[in-house]
Length: 327
Image (cartoon, rainbow, N blue to C red; front, side, top):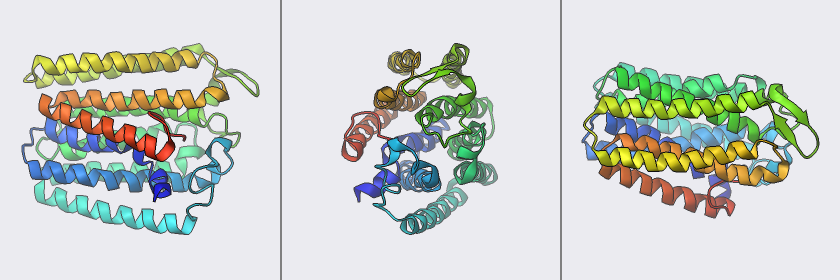
């Protein structure tokens, strides 16, 4: 069972859950049953979609020394079993989400459109664009930028807040995929389309030095992300001071993680990979926690508490780490 949850990349399920539930709360939803249903459904959506990415990455992962312990490359789970579980699983969860949209959404055409974008761009990324094109960040960023609007449009139409949420999610994914995702795979010689290979200044068997201007650009993106969150908070207006304080505290933690990553990247070494993975996990989780500060403070604390407990326990049980999985 443990191997299956490793295949599902279960440790990052809170990112998917918060991306689905938080926009629903931002839109003003007060239907606790609907919130609870989507909260629960977000987990298998994450498991089957991220597991599908693991499945489609098998042929490259089996050549990556850092991923030999994964369930598919190690042979603990067969390709045939994984294919059936993941694809049938996707069919089931998306049919359930389709029914929920048709029953609850006041704008079912909009909600279904963004769900279609999520599925189309997600499959395009998983099925080949992930490792066979230099700019794989484009489809996956569009995929995850569309996802929050699936539930935001249950009770709202496309407005300024929707646009800002889309931009926030899009730029977050640019950072996480174009930089962090590519960094994880940079030592795999079969990753010939890795975007960061274009920006390597020096490389040997034990060190990689990346272009400083590129790293500065990604730091700039983090500033843009924070600005977008503040703009959403400004448009919402009704949020109390506690939300702003919570956002500031989380931003300090996020800033620590991001600056630590960029300090480590001054000279990227294979032995630093596990440390970087932990910092990646801290930066990613904190970013989604920051997103929850846009909802009533009670929900903010509930969602952050859930996310923190789940994330730490999942990493401990699945990978024997605190913040970063061994992927």
